Image (cartoon, rainbow, N blue to C red; front, side, top):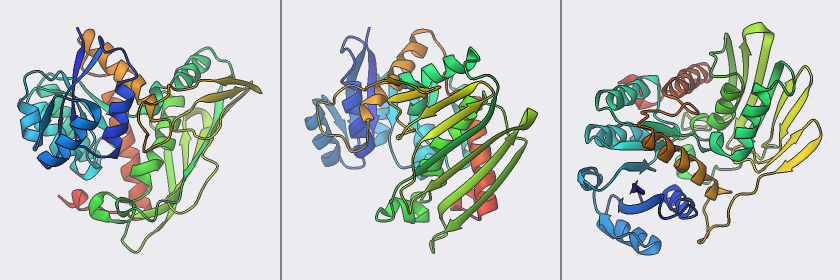
Length: 334
């Protein structure tokens, strides 16, 4: 039986996720309904993607009995309230990253998922790419020896976007793109909490971070460094340095389609989309959708690839980085 999806939000990321979903077999994944803030937006999205049901409110989607799992694609200041709407309606949830604005909100969402006995996963899509699966396999096999340093960059000029600059929209680089660098480091170090976090950054006049540089120290003198910026273009690659070699992820590290392992290149192409995409390699979101189906079929409430503990760790480190850089959202004061 197919996993029946509901799409929450008719925005650009929801468009790309829907296109990605349609690269998978229809007997496994079925698009049942879409909800937006206005019925007109939902109907337009439904027509474009051949979805039979369109709702002008998220509450209607939450009440639809034919939905197995909801993809939440709203902007992150609204993740908490939207996730709680669906978990309290006993719906399984795949929520875009960051799962919430801070640790307090993440804990609230996780507690609600547990209380209502539903599946919940933060959509850190990078971890499900075949290249990322191969990285974890190589590390588990000790292919590069003991990892001593991880470095990552993600920087693109985004200053023209209101959601990057405006605090009320969750603006700033850390929660938007810096999270990709951080999750990568946390993946390499198996979800271990860093012993020391040192962050420096520059902020915009609106009070959100523009560029951050973070150094992390883990046990046994293992280090990591990442830079993220919404002002400038960075190399956007990542490298894992071990005692026996290196694994390099060329640009673009957040949606990797190639790996260089001790000099040897392997390609991992993503499927072609049937409609134009808003973001690079977005058909790669199919891999996280496959993971959701796998977990649901097994009756799991979380994924081991991006577990609830992983989401909590990301939020805690993000909070500390923002504290050191001086970024405070209204959600931090509630």
